[in-house]
Image (cartoon, rainbow, N blue to C red):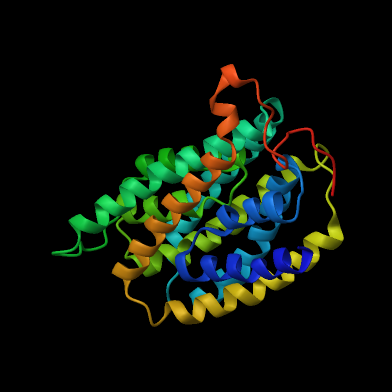
Length: 270
């Protein structure tokens, strides 16, 4: 099980390189349901893994001209504030609640991404500059959710960059990786002191994920934007439903059933 779980780190990196998001969406379930870490422990580890991996991926996309620094600077600066605050706030809610919120945001994001993709099927819009207040407000909201549910935020940042900033999908993917790296590392700092981190497992998982993101970044050069968008929204739906299913006991208060193994906020280290 350990070998299988760590091998899935390559798939997590591949999704980041190819889609500009999905890293924590894969990482947290892998750490919780495959490797058996606690929910809060997995969330903190996921932020560290995605932060380092995204930084490597952003450098690769930058060499391909797919990083829009103006959008990255605005989103990065504002989201870091929200991310740190969200991470600190997360100590007051259970791990199961975080995972359910995580799944809900995934499904909403998938809907808007799919809706936008259909609207653009006939004619892709020209990139445009969003007003600074609108971009800042969206970035602050993304940052708060990022820290609260413990994800890098790619599944929120990519749609925001496409829908609000008007970036083409491939530029949104590359730009999101830089923002994700900043978000994730700040979010991880917010968890330090509250969660015990198994540094050896974290280092191994991160190294494998880096190899995956380098592969995904190379492959993304040959895939159409329409295909990326369809794959991204479909991926979010599948993972969101999976997380709801694994935590279904928490949605039935009268059952009095305990949370499924691996999602308890108080579960100890691996």
